[in-house]
Image 1 (cartoon, helix red, strand yellow):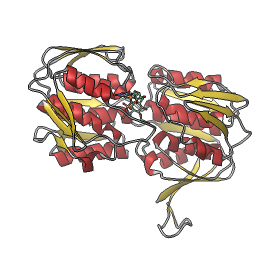
Image 2 (spheres, rainbow, N blue to C red):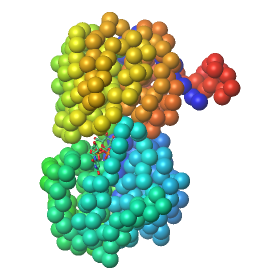
Image 3 (spheres, protein in one colour):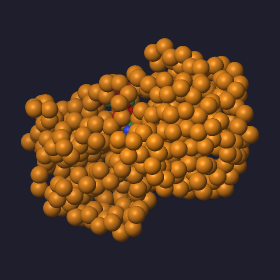
Image 4 (tube, rainbow, N blue to C red):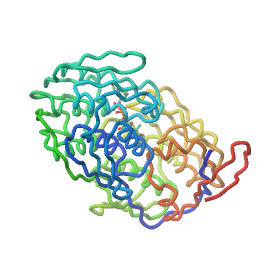
Length: 429
Ligand code: EPZ
């Protein structure tokens, strides 16, 4: 029942440090199942999607040591079962990576289908196509995905759609298969490269990650490692958008500017100044943005995970903008919430036409999913008056210490707990 309360209209200034990448962490943690040794993983983001995954590994029998908030040691050598039931997986999308990791380790896996953000149908046909190409039989029985192989054998796999999840799952399954696996039309996101680097640090032989052809030569075993996760491209982009919309001058620290190129290019087009400081970016904005068009695409295109945040900026930009969603079928559901704040947006399928208004107005709104929730936070920072955001558990799946980080750069945002029977705010933190 917790909510965020934001009093908008404050310019942001100072420095914000970016955490480890969620979408890398949720691939790398299950990948530890493939190791015979201890995996020390650093720069882990402290978010609920990650703690859910760690809990799943613990319940499966892994030894887990939290060394600090952001460093963990995982030893999966005692995991004996290849079965991951629904009550463990329903809350996160990334549980699908347990399929590839379990299959790669045991030659079999029985995993409940994943949960996670709801923005239309989220098929896994390309994951299954990859597993079958490696020699696994796949069936769905009583709601569980059942995979089994006598032995996984390397194969040539062409993905019909560029899929982050399928690329990662095939890498996990193929890393200890016999012979060479080639994934063509592979996804190129930074977290794919991070997973490949993690697996290679354990002794894998993966080449080409970051291009659309990935070659995996199977090895017989993987050892322990120490590895640090890359910074979160989307968390960084979200703070860049927050500064762009609210106005101010903020250094966004601990990032890889190359990963932010498409976001930076669009912010500059909208009238924002972005300086590359090597391992940080400085964002300067007077809060008055110019219209532009955006189309989301797989990396290195503009990321779909920044689409709601950017649409929110354009809702109060000068002129008419068009945002086209090129990855998901139904990622504009949050637009109804922005409309409650005075935005003028028409959605037709995968296209949103946005008539910029002078200013958004604070209102009670919902976080309908993770990035939509981040967009509501940005809208609240930009708006006049007070914005109250409910369903914030979606936001906490992917943003570490959001309140602390935003407060430190001058935002007026707090979290409150509302008693279930009482609609008024009862306790402020
Ligand atoms: C990953 O989801 C991310 N999640 C998503 O981020 C992100 O939006 C998405 O990639 C695209 O960048 C994680 O990394 C945990 P896909 P994933 O497979 O892997 C179609 C966030 O906000 N498709 O690349 O599930 C699919 O329908 C989250 O952090 C098939 O048709 O996405 C979609 O249209 C939300 N068949 C497109 O491909 C398949 O077998 C891309 O999906 C698989 C996917």
